[in-house]
Image (cartoon, rainbow, N blue to C red; front, side, top):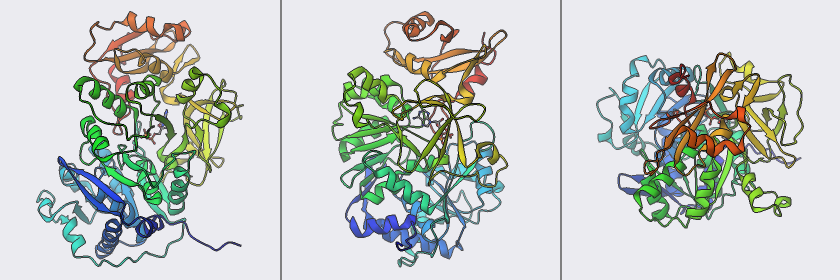
Length: 537
Ligand code: ADP
């Protein structure tokens, strides 16, 4: 037999401290940057672990983080797991009620809060029943009087012992907690084991998956509170890549500057981020040297082909489509071209890249119809995707709703897809976003993607609106580009997409709006749109 060697999250950091002590961690602060090394990260993480122990944190206790992407947040990704506790990354954009709910539901004992976010916590502080300490992620002066008894993070670290003393835990111990951003109902908690995060990092780094290397300079735009930051802080540390954190409220200008100044090679975020960056580049006319960018991972919602093409043609940057969810830590699939598809035509290869890709090693999937029967992978038939694997959840923590989503040993994703004979997933829609017209299903994603290919369209979301005869019909909500010369009209949009669809798929109407509302993680908020246009005829 092989030796027993538990796969522990902090072993990822131990490796970086030994193998890559001089590699860098860079955080944008104001108009400048803060820099330190993995050696520094290791010592500060040890101090944070000891400081948390001093605050009474031990095995199984929850430590909440309420912060932007920065180096202190990275320290908090590692320190609680190191001492046998759990890091709970709290979404800073949730509604106050949801925020209070998840902090109480998690039972967070300590909250680590970025200084500028303190007012959001102060507003709900009297409803937090389990929190014993508020720690402000900054110098003593940042521990403002807005939260009585708040502790300064830097003062706390300075006073803590520097010895690294990992707790004896086994690999199935919980080390992380993340809530789904609940588009309907209360957020649901997903717990990650040490083993899950370790294996997720190993698989993510692989060449046919994210292809992350020690040579990379990784900048995650996806927030550290969204689905584990797609695992990137752990995976980057495992491989020893430099990490660049965009800090407080990153906007397209900051993203472009960081890429140009720091030589970012790898970045990741939801499509709306990349649409925003492209729009900024076009409107501002500023020229940035983005040539260091080797690949951009786009995930979280469907990537319109037009965006992928624009990055390739105008910026010379490869955009890679990935798919996953909070329940899967989150990586399920990445779009890498299998060798036997190399001889496909240019057009076929482009279409392939719009798909959500092939599953990472370790993940298993099934396509299942409404009756639970397994569907063939022929690229045509559609069904719900079910997953299982070493980093897929088997329940929502303390939640009666678990049974609806986890059964028969599989996670039922609620995503409708087709899988082609080569194993490529193509997401058709979320079950709840599909348009049910006269007993047939219309994919909102396909319509949106086609509309966003129009050069004068910035963003488009398609929603179902109630219809007396057909039950539901599609309505397109379109944001025109600011600089368009010819005003967009309903007929222009419908004529543009009409060749791609059967007549009954075409939206009944097109409304032009200033902005598509976004969810707390930057996806199109279709629930908000449905409410707004409920009575549209
Ligand atoms: P939330 O549920 O809060 O939006 P998640 O990131 O966990 O946060 O959402 C996961 C869901 O997002 C998936 O189940 C799927 O519906 C959608 N999704 C993720 N990546 C993609 C993608 N590349 N294409 C289409 N949909 C995606």
